[in-house]
Image 1: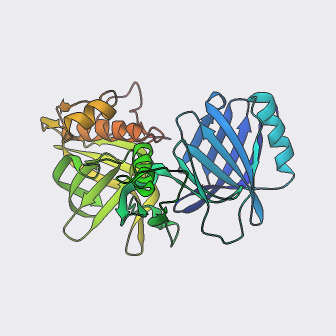
Image 2: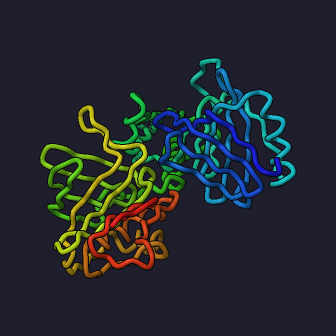
Image 3: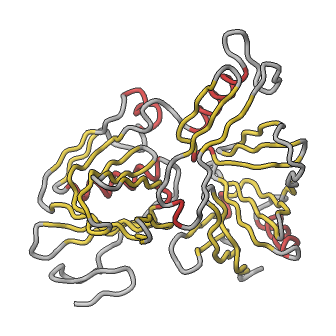
Length: 364
């Protein structure tokens, strides 16, 4: 595998279903690209800390755990691929892939394994299911023994799949020995507190940190309040309301309009949002170009100092609110431990006079 190996029809697994694409593994690490373009995942070899194999219905699943706690699932490998890939990880990463087994007994009781940002439900020594704690938006203690996990609502998730996991409930009896409690703090409360610390769920997490009022959006057309939250972006209009996870933002484009007082910001999404039967992979926002703005983050001092001091600034002041939007969106996405988005650069050695810019080509 000196020059790398390509694997077609490999899907990236997630809460909202799977996305088919192509996987390349070489000396640098792992690169996955969605079929037809769009979302891409790159994992450097030095960042890989764990590898697992699992036999799933009709195929095999490769699990990759990286340093920052993220976990990627690639599905679609043949049985004969396991030997060559196992050898690659042993020789190049010094990691021996662990083989896991999938539980098909139908039992709904077992133990919970919390590792990194993943929650894995084990039935005996076999895995029944796993969910990413990064997707948890809220936890609720129901009664003394039940804990409900609610997941982020994302209007891009349903663009490719009809079904998406929204909530899951666990029953933890007082006799549980994994999460030991006492009279004042039952095991269910211990489990909930553990989830909250690992999922970074806290009070105020759903509040908007910055709001841009009355922004004209060309697609989907309308006038919206654009809210930047700690974990998602929200477009709130009179007739429509969209929630978009930062992980769905692929790219940002800053497009000034020549001789006009407005600047376009294009937010590229993968998967796209849906309005009726129409999919919108690009959101086009129109900002006033010369509009000096100073935005102070609406976030508590304790939360900012403990979790976001090194990732965000307490306030932002620029000659244009579109630049505040771009800068803060990128920083919030990185703070949410998602892959970074890149702002499109203007072509070098050209004067900005009536040009139309794009990533691949341009014309005057």
